[in-house]
Length: 210
Ligand code: 5GP
Image 1 (tube, rainbow, N blue to C red):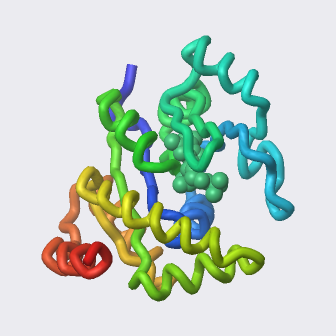
Image 2: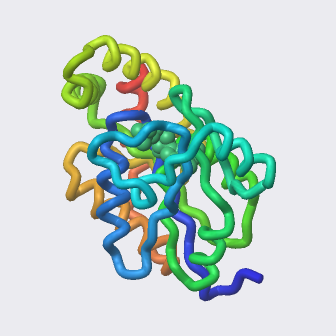
């Protein structure tokens, strides 16, 4: 049974290339914050550590998790399955840990709709401009500019989901973006005043979607 001493669920989503994974990893260094490690059918990247970055599983194993109703949420993203197992998350929250989720908008929607008895704060991270995003995506996939172009198209679709999040934060400068998120989390947890300019965010989104 959830109580006031329970942890808070904090979701960070973003279109590809907005720098969300780095932000999650910085936030996870805070006292009492832990990352929810997802399961995925995607193959590990060279810089990734199994069971730390993800639990890498076969499609068959993933389907078993779905069938056994072990997942709090799951989604197919770029041809691979990704999902969050329920038990480790609930255990952490019950121990008073704040749990960070690096998941896409489909997973965020599912968790929101579950209306669990734990506090939930959702953030959508955006790049400062389409030009900067293209630059970041091209650097990541140096071999193939086509991938960057494809992901830009995906960006135009993904950005539309900003509306379902509590806060939209622009990642122009990593430190400033981190502080913004940190301050909003503290304000939400402690019922303090929130420094958030929704008109500015609205005009930024208009620029990104024009
Ligand atoms: P990547 O393959 O680049 O690590 O992640 C691709 C996308 O999948 C990212 O937007 C990431 O946030 C999302 N993702 C990672 N884990 C999960 C998960 O457990 N559930 C959902 N719904 N999305 C996830």
